[in-house]
Image 1 (tube, rainbow, N blue to C red):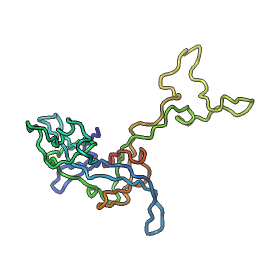
Image 2: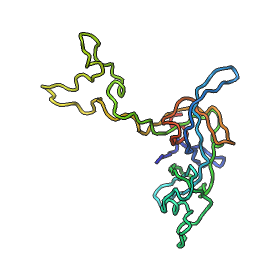
Image 3: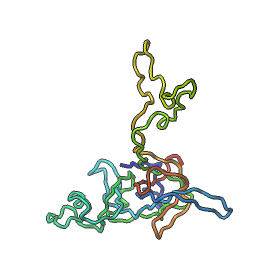
Length: 238
C-alpha cells in the first residue's frame, strides 16, 4: 500500500489537506519538443480515472486514508469478496455494501490523508488534479532480470583479461578471508535474483497532460515494463 503523509499532500482553497495521487498504467516512452526545439524524453502513463472505493477514519480504522481503484474489468473477473467490497455483488441479499456507482476495478491502492472526510465513495479522480511543471514521484515494479552475476547485478569490473584467465573475466573474486574472519561478511554483494522489486523514481517533472485521453507525460524514465502498474504522487523531496 502506498502511504501519504503531509509532505505528499496539498492545501485546498479551504486550507484543508487533500490527497494528490493516481494509479495508472505505463504506456511507453517517447520524446517531445518545446518551442525552442529542445527535445525532452518522456514516459507516457495512462493515469485514471480512479474511483474512491473506501474512505477510512480514525474511529473505525485507527487512521485516515482514501482507497482508490483503477482498471475497469468485467465483474466476473473479480472474486466474490472483491465484488462485495465494491458493491457490485448481485447476489448480496443481506445488503452489506450498497452499490454507490463504483465500477468493477481490478487494482486497489491506499493513500493516507488527513482530509479523508472530504471524499465520497464513488468519486472519480483524473489527471486534471496535476498541472504542468509539478514534481512527482512514480512508484512501480522493475523488470525481472532473473538470476544475474555480479558484473550485471552490481557493476563489478571482473578479472583481468591476461595470462590466460579465460574463466575469471566475470568472476566476483575473493568473498572473504580464510584465517582471521573465516566467513563471508554479511551483506556481501554476490550473484542472485535481479529486478522485480518495488522502486520509486523521485522528483520527476510533469511535461504534458491530456485530460481527454487520461494521459500524462512525465520527464525521464519510470520503473517497470510497458503495461505495468504505477502510482503517481506528489514528490516527497520537491
